[in-house]
Each structure stands twice: as C-alpha cells, then as structure tokens.
Length: 82
Image 1: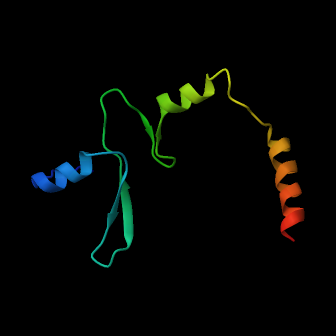
Image 2: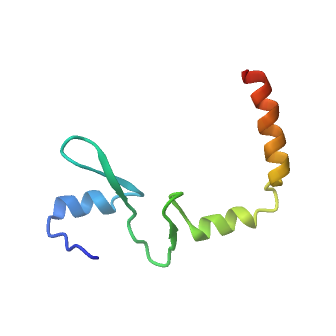
C-alpha cells in the first residue's frame, strides 16, 4: 500500500531524520516510519540499515559471543538479581 503526502510540513517531519513514531490523537503509537535513503536497505525492527550491520560484522575489533556464552552470562547475572 502507498500513501501520497501533499502536506509539505508533514513530509518535512517524516524525512528530517531517522525513524519516526506515528501516533494517533490519543498519543498511542500506531506504527513507525523509516525514511528511504538512496541505496540504503533497512531492517526496520532494529532501526538499522543492512549496510550498518555489515560494517559492524566486518569490524576487526568487534567482540563476538556464542549463544552459550550469552546464556552463561545471563545466568550469572540472574544469580545476583535474586
């Protein structure tokens, strides 16, 4: 589905930055808008571009953890929270 926006003020607000929350009159969030940028592909759930994720993945200084290491750390933290 596509919607044409003729309101210049609304269009400026939507395209001024990154993700924008769309709210109804009661202030409840009804969705998000991610402005298109030339050549960018978004993973909307995370609010990042695929290019940004690739840059992070390819960073030689990045520290990576296995799922087992993450779960072990979460169990460790949970012991202190109890």
